[in-house]
Length: 129
Image (cartoon, rainbow, N blue to C red; front, side, top):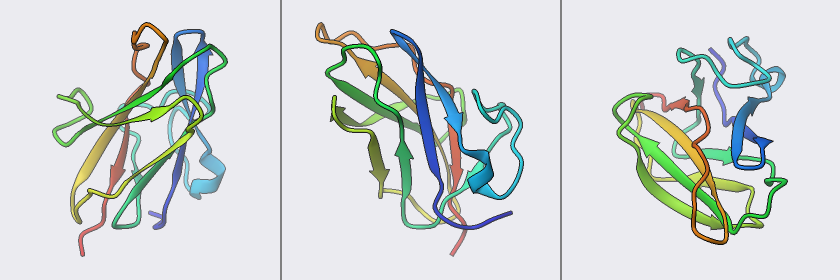
């Protein structure tokens, strides 16, 4: 499996929902569900000590995005680890540990503080030291 830092791209699929779109060619290996939501078994390898998430800005009016992480599995529980402003399209999670797998979801937030449905989960495997 390829090693390195990989970027996850999130694209809005409707005014209130974002769907995960991964740039598979850049990963150097095939993942099921490329170009759309990843399959539940899809995972990528991130280079320690961080995981960088990148997304396209929502086409709807949003005030920001909320990033959630789970260390259990793709079904959660997810804990909010960050929030961003509407202009942000990237977040780097530096609080990761070697040998751990992390799962991420992102929501967009509107001016009434309503959150969209979360993206499909994506995972990052941090190699053991």
